[in-house]
Amino acid sequence: MLIDSHTHLEMPDFKKDLEVVIQRAKESGIEYIFTVGTEKKDWKRALEIANSHSSIYAILGVHPHNAKEIDDQTYPMLKELCRDGKVKAYGEIGLDFFRNLSPREIQLRRFREQIGLAKKLGLPIVVHDREAHQETLEILKSENAEECGGIIHCFSGDYEMAKVCIDMGFYISIPGSITFKNAERLREIVKRIPLESLLVETDAPFLTPEPLRGKRNEPSYVRYTAQKLAEIKKISFEKVAEVTTKNALRVYKLL
Ligand SMILES: [Zn+2]
Ligand SMILES: [Zn+2]
Image (cartoon, rainbow, N blue to C red; front, top):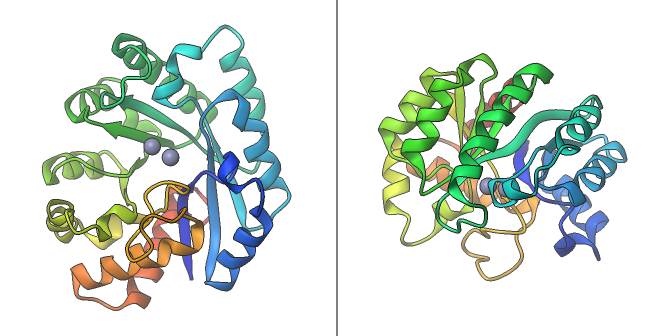
């Protein structure tokens, strides 16, 4: 049994065969899927998918790419939608200084605000950090994010960053890119992070793991990431599945 702790089933990439994808995940032993609606047009769809499948939960928030689209109606709408019992976290929120699709100062401000909102809602946060490790850490600390805790998804920082986040009550989520040939640095870091702090995710339709790289990613492929994790840590696949599942259930308050 495995959990795909972070995916995007509401994206158009799954429009044609969503039910087949969900069925395939079930048959591969994926017990739960957490689908992340990252912008206004996706929230209702994510919630709809969660509400029509017992194995799927939703995560809602405004992605740093879309931070510039936040207006007066955004937070009231999110507050309303997040009241649904199928919403288990707030996100993904954070900073993306790689693509910079929203101006940096807006990303910083909206990240802070959304941590505050998640705390009010009593939800853990899902953090997206790309090329903004220092600023992400600063904001997590200054906004007392340990009060909500959550997940650093698609982790790309160094071991010291992982350690600080874990000490604040965060989990570190590992995507399929850990299987890539050039991911030696990430593998070395993951080797040092205790299994008790790790989750696995696909971030589908993105980041398809080896040996399927090039194809669209989907939740059933999370097993390749778990397999790689077992290899890196020299433990059994079953152990990785058991502990990462327990970790995900704990952070999403399903235990
Ligand atoms: Zn992300
Ligand atoms: Zn994502």
